[in-house]
Length: 128
Image 1 (cartoon, rainbow, N blue to C red):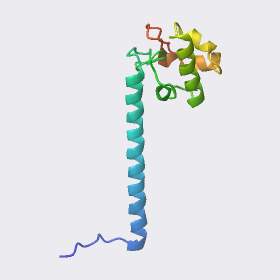
Image 2 (image 1 turned 180 degrees about the horizontal axis):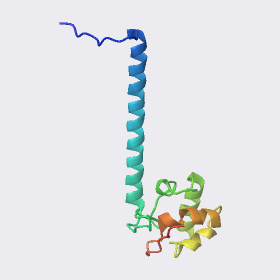
Image 3 (image 1 turned 30 degrees about the vertical axis):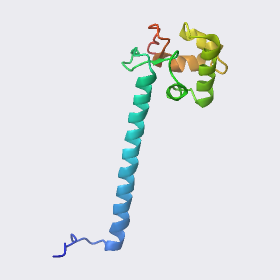
């Protein structure tokens, strides 16, 4: 027994692209949700377990990898690589202020990431 299509003023030809567009939007939304969940998981695994003043898990500068560091505001792949390289050459960060010694990390960048990072010694930034 054939299934009757609901009656509509639109021809069947125009309904198909709408269905396809809806499926594409749903797939895009699902992909974005999965990406956010993956980013949070990476951040949680790389962080030191300290909590920021905003209630988020802080990223530990002394254990985070480049992927976790790039989740911080103002830190792209180049700066993340520089932070990891500085840490490998000079040892663990003793304070957040020590980040200023890393190439391309200035006062502005430090202010942006301060609420989200720690040095594994409970040196967690505060709300700006």
